[in-house]
Image (cartoon, rainbow, N blue to C red; front, side, top):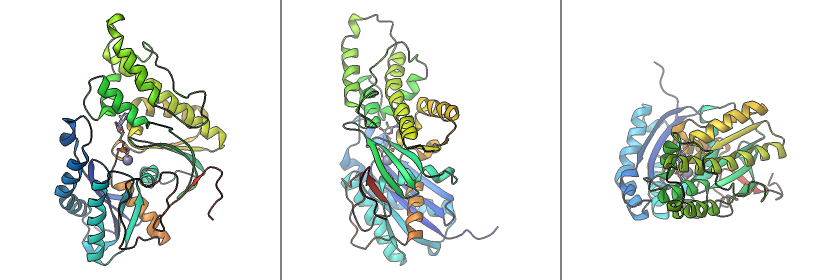
Amino acid sequence: MSDPSPGILGIETSCDETAAAVVDMEGNVVSSVLSSQTDVHAQYGGVVPELASRRHMETIEAIVKEAMDQAKMPWGDLRAIAVTRGPGLAGALVVGVSFGKALAYALGIPLIAVHHLEGHLASAWLDQQNFLTPSVMFVVSGGHTHLYHAIDRGRYELIGRTLDDAAGEAFDKGAKMLGLAYPGGPAIDRLACSGDPRVIRFPRPYLNRGGLNFSFSGIKTSLLYYLRDLDQREQSKSMADIAAGYQEAIVEVLVEKAFRAVRRYKVKGLAVVGGVSANSRLRALLLARASEVGIQLALPRLGFCTDNAAMIAVAGRQAYRLGRFASWELDAVADLSASALDGLESSTEFHKAGESEKR
Ligand code: KG4
Ligand code: ZN
């Protein structure tokens, strides 16, 4: 067997997953290890920031070692360390940034700062290296519902976003109302599989307004009222039908607006990434529509939709090729802007639609 080629180590600790991964210099994922904290937070019905950072501190060393072991890569073969700088939970981010910085310094290799969204965007290429630009790229996660016109790989123009809650939040909060366990998205997805989405029709928020923007706060209220008045309605409505109807309303808006963006920007490709892209109904509708209109669709494999470090390592490899390294003063930035990567360390250009190009 030939020796493994050198690689980049990615580290992700922005929320409740401690993750490390190695990609080789061709962009192949050679290891991806993740320790989920679901058990820690489930009893509280959501992520508790202090507990998240403590668990990151306890596990990060073992997770990084495991990623290197699985990659069968000697430390000396690492060319750089890429770490999520933000946005995310401050205390959680600091753990990854400090660990990555110390390790890079000790190994004498460059440190790369990755914007969490840039990581999700890069996940489109993890399994589909031939995904073409220009295209529309859509980040649907617990913190973001952001539509981008990807002019080129690494050059993203923001063309639409949620004005309030993210799609993942609508799933999580809806699940809580339905009495389902955290994390809510996968729970609704599972329950909805045995329900009929046509039994209860929830409003499609912003479907015919707001251009390419979204609003998901109203749909939670619809569910709240629906559940409050349930006693007076036929009791035969099953929880599965309610979950399916609720999911359908969110998913339909996501699909419609994504394809509206594809038409408006006249592109031949669409990538949908981030935690919500793991949703089975969303994936089914996207696949059907993409084949109907004949465009290339990039959907990460399930393990790469939700937070992971492979996407951070791949985004880091792109930055490495461009020679964009972070300084040793790098800090975690919890509220790092989604529409602009503002630091000099950024490896990606984000523009607001209409803003002049930087190059
Ligand atoms: O990308 P991610 O892991 O973290 C953020 O950057 O936010 O996304 C997490 C979000 C959560 O809101 C979770 O409920 C949602 O993704 N999610 C899903 C599914 N799997 C995860 N939502 C709907 N259906 C799923 N199967
Ligand atoms: Zn994420």
